[in-house]
Image (cartoon, rainbow, N blue to C red; front, side, top):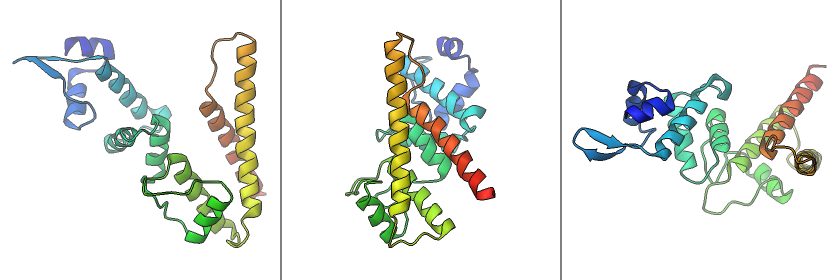
Amino acid sequence: MRDVVLQSGLPRTTIHHYIREGLLPPAKKSSRNAALYGEEHLDRLRLIGELREEAAGALSIPQVRKVLAHMGTGMTPAAAARLVTSGIEPTASPGVHPDLLEAMVTANLIDRAGESPRSAGDLLVARSCDALVGMVGVDLGDLTPLSDLIREVGEYAESLAALYATQAEAASQPPGPTPGQIREGIRHVLDALLWRSLET
């Protein structure tokens, strides 16, 4: 335990609290009064710290537990945190109007779901479209303008991320932001532009 405290920079009480809360798996007992902690424990402690930081939205212990559970199904930490902070549970049905869901599938905005839960991205897109459709009163019979706009934005974000990666590689620069980080930055710009247009 002493090594984990030193390497993580966290107090012993915090580490024990995370174990009690189910955020950190217990260590293997090496003797009656000693336990072995590995690199996976340090990695988990780093992740918990990142999720609990103000920059990540300062997730609560129950929210961190949900993020870790989602990650156990193969989700990335970013996707899992986004679902948790959006209050969306992974499910095959994102809880939107069936006509809108079918229109989004037809427009290739989201994948058709089988028995397994939808991806975090599909759930977020479905919920966002549902909220937007309700807010502006889009006719469910014609989602073409909305789907065209979303498709163009997605293609633009992917193209920009690919261009940046190619330029960084050509210049032999150290790796910069990931495509996911670039998409997130673009999303913030688009959110700001949308809100500005709605205010005028």
